[in-house]
Each structure stands twice: as structure tokens, then as C-alpha cells.
Length: 407
Image (cartoon, rainbow, N blue to C red; front, side):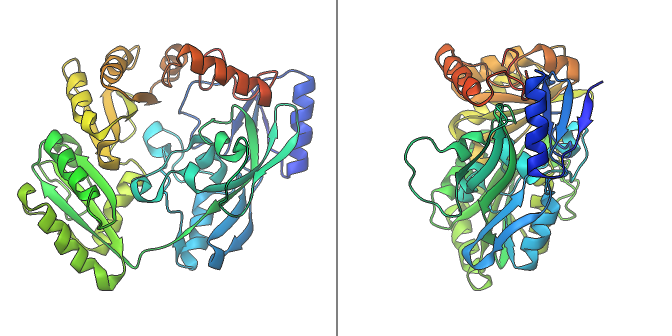
């Protein structure tokens, strides 16, 4: 069983890493454990948690910028922001409830380390797009800083953004600086019923092409829509195509009517007010419509919206699958029956033919240890990845094997 080390300060973390580097001991880097059941099973001698590195170190509401230590829980950050009428625009997703890990345990460092972003990504960008700067410690136990408090052009490599999506394999973040945004005065949702997947994605694409600033574009096939818990839609026995509008209260009704007019050929929508909309979109943030189950595996597929339905149909020829489409079809959450390879052969074949990449989000540990969880690297990309890994973590101690078996 791995030892648990919990530094309470940046200097202590640096000292611990220096000691582990000298002893050549593998290090599993975690926050509060919300993401520990995702990705490959890391090979380590020590579990190093950043949960003791907590606290907001800078907040300037008028400048829309905040800095926080990496282990600061997301709920603390969102509470402080909400008190000033602000939010994280990219709407981070909590994978804990759907992977059997603790819900509500996301750390701000873990959010940027994995770059998981929610439905508002289509209008606000990803977590990576909202990161301004970072302090981190590399595999030589060197403390470094990248970026700052404002967006600007940079010369050379933008290291801060390069660390996002690296899953703690390159360095241990100690502090992050990021953009925040005002909370919209109100939101409303249009839910178009009974559209087939391909036609629904067409409708979402039409909506996104309007100047109406749609901030959420999701399609739920019938078997997925049936899992909704929002009272107005609970128990619905038909597919739902969902579009969210967020703006000033004085403008929301006008925008809603314009959007309905642009989509009139797709039917008459069910309308949800601000409170109902908040409840609905919160379900997507926690992935509660893809609940934890040992009887299924969960995939996350990124592709072109025009190819999303085709990919799902191709997979459904070989196995029963439950899917929902986010980002106007550009991202698919796909639940398939549990199997020795979590359906990887069929999923990756369908994606490879049509373009995109697939990541296994939920499966039993032995499955995640024996197959490619992340999209397999092409030879030229693998060489580049190995070079970056060697530059940041020469001994390969951080989250060894977490993303790829030999990295």
C-alpha cells in the first residue's frame, strides 16, 4: 500500500519531492480524490496529495481574476465568487459521482490538470482558455512560475496552458491564476422533443450559427432523457434537444423568441424558466444522467458535430449504448456494457474511421490497467510527448503510467 504524504505549504511540497527524487520513488499526485478513479491506475510508492494547499491568494472582482492554491476545493471558490455575482465561466464537470469517487471533492488544481469543461465551453472556452498563470514544481524539485494575471501574447511555449490536460504527469501545481466572469442575470432553456440524433445535432448547429449567444447545446436521446430529475422534464419518454440562453433579464425574452423562430421547422419547444434551467444544467455538471454503475463503462468522445451521431450509431451496431451529446454534438458521453476491454475495440474503430478521439472515463481498475484509456499516440506525437515528459520529469516519477502505459 502506498504511503500518503500531505504537505501543508509549497516549500514543504518542494522538500518532499526533492526527497522522493533522490530516492527514485514513484509519486501519485492527487487532490481530494475526485478524479482518482479516472485514467489508468498510476504506479507509485507514495500518494502525494495537494489537499493541504488551500486558500484563495488573490481575488480582484473588478479585474475578473482570481488566484488560489491548487488544493482549494471548487465549492469554496464558487461560493466566494457567487457572493460577488461571479462564476467560473467554463462550468467545470465533477466526475466523482459517475466514477464512484467522492462528489463535490474537486480541487481547482485538478480541474486545470485534467481540463474537463462543461456545457458552457461552446461560448466561454475550456478550462485551459481561462487559465492565466501557474506555480508548479517539476520532477527535478524545481519551483517555477508561468503566465501572470492578464491575457497577453507570449514568446515561446505557454507552459501554464501546456500543463492543463497533463493529469499531473509533468509537474505538481501549487497555485493557479484564472479568469472569472459575471453570473448572467437570468437563463432560459428551450427543449425540443422527439428529434432523432442527426436532426437534433442539425438543430443545435443552426442555433449556434445565430448571433443569439447560445451558452448550452445538448441532445439527449430517449433512453438518456428518461434519467433526468428536473421536475418539469422528469420521466419524459422522448428525446430532448436542449438550448440554453443566458443574458440580461430585459433581453432574454426577445432572444428566446428569435431562437424559436430560427428553429420553428424543428417543432414547438418546452420552455424552462431560470430556476428550472439551473436545476437541469446542474445535472450535466455532475453527470448524474450517467450514474455510477459497475455494470457499465463510460466513454468521452470528442469529434466533429457532424460525425457524432454517425459514431454512436456505428457503436450501437455492436452493443447497446446510452449517449448524450454536448457542445452541439462535438462531445459525446457514451455508456456501454462492462466488458474486458470496456468495448474499446468497437469504440476506437468507430472513432478512427470518422475522426476524433475517445477517452475511457469509467471502468474497473483492472480494465483501465490493461487497455489504452486515452487515445493511442501516433509515433510522431509519442516522440514529442516523451520529450516533454523528459524535460519536466526526467526520472518519470509523477503519475507513472497514469495516461499511457510506458510514460
